[in-house]
Structure formats: C-alpha cells, structure tokens
Length: 272
Image (cartoon, rainbow, N blue to C red; front, side):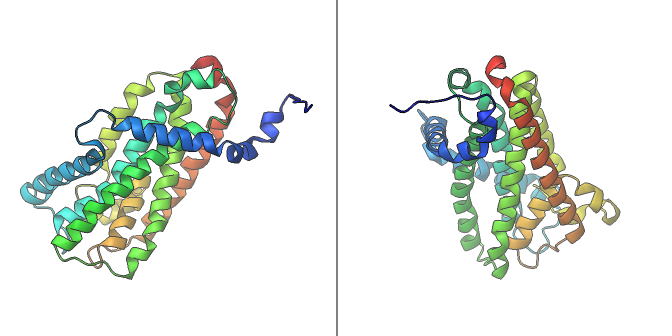
C-alpha cells in the first residue's frame, strides 16, 4: 500500500512543480469561466464582438468626428480599435482576476492547490475574448483596404507584454482583494480612469514631446503604441524610450504582483 506523507513546508518546495501537476484544474477553471461568462445571454460570444465594436464607434465619433484629433493617415476606426484590443483585454483581465479568489472561496478553503491557478485562468479566459475581437480588426482592414506590412509579425511581442502586465496586476489585485474588500469598488473606478489617461481614443503623438517619457510611466502606453506601430504601417512613429520605460514597468509590476501573491498566499484559506 502506498503511503502519503505530508511534510511541513513540502508545498513550498514543490510549488512550481505543482503548477504543472495541477494543469488540469487550470483547464477546468478556464473552461468553466468561459461557459459561465455568456451563459443565458442572447448574443453569447457575440458580446466579445459587440462591446469593442460599440466602444470603437463612440470613440471614433467623439475623438475623430467632434474633437477632430489627428489619425496620422490611418482610418480613425482602425486607429481606435488597434488600441482597444489590448486595453479591453487588460481591463477585463484585472477585473476578472480581482474576484477570482473570492469567487472560488469554497474550493480554496477545502483543498490544496497552487492558488496562482485562479488569477491565471481568469486572465486566459479574457485572452479568448481578445482573440475573438481580433476578427473585427481584420474586417476593418478589409473594409478600408488597409493592409499591414511585415511589422505585424512583431505583434506577439506586444501581446506577451499585455499578457504579463495583466497577470501581474491580476495577482496583485486578487491578493489585495482577499484582505481588503474595498478593492472590489476601487478597481472599476481605476479601470475607467485608466481608459482616459491611456492613448485609446487618440494617438500618443498629440502628447507634447517633453511629456512623452513621463506619460510612458503608464505601462499601457508602450503596449498600445506597440500595437499601433505593428498594425498601422507609417501612421505611428515608434517611441523607443517610452517603450523601454513601459516594458520596465511591466516587468516591475509582474515581479511585485508575483512576490506579494506568494507572500500572502498562505493566509487565503483563512480570509476568503
């Protein structure tokens, strides 16, 4: 008969290996959240298309039509949508990850598994919406006969950046939300504020040059500018200094989020 021996600190020693061993739980949680997200809705997965489409139309009318902000030679709907793709993924990911631990309190309090699975699965579900929304961008390019160049091959770099940024913020907010439930009210406000201080409805080129580097402290600035540079050939000049600063911020946020999550993970079962 095989004997199971539980040793003090064994979960810490095998934590990263356990992440791989519990991969089926990761798949299950992601698939469950994906099914529940659009359950009993009329449009189903169509909401992944309607939300960015409606937002794009509103932003195009306000910033491109009324404010007459420059699009640098690109169709304004494509300029907006190429920024909406990473932004909606990021905002949805951190909102979902924030509630991932609280929403699964019944599981956390009963069995052991690496809690990192929870926010990670929430981020992946939002990535599926991101992939579906990409279809709108392809349709817009066909409609406006706007074809990308070889730069589009570099788009995965910026996708990985927003993925790591979302996971970093998601881990941090999820851990903070367990101890301080105020964050469930703070996050929607921060996300809405971030939409207007990030270059989603407008190009970063309108920001005065002497403020560009400071503006890039917002990590989403470098990500959005990178998306536009890869998609809109010639319409966006790549600001390398800002991209490097935003990339450093992404790495810093990911490391802080992972460190704080791992530091507080032991107390989750007692607090949820």
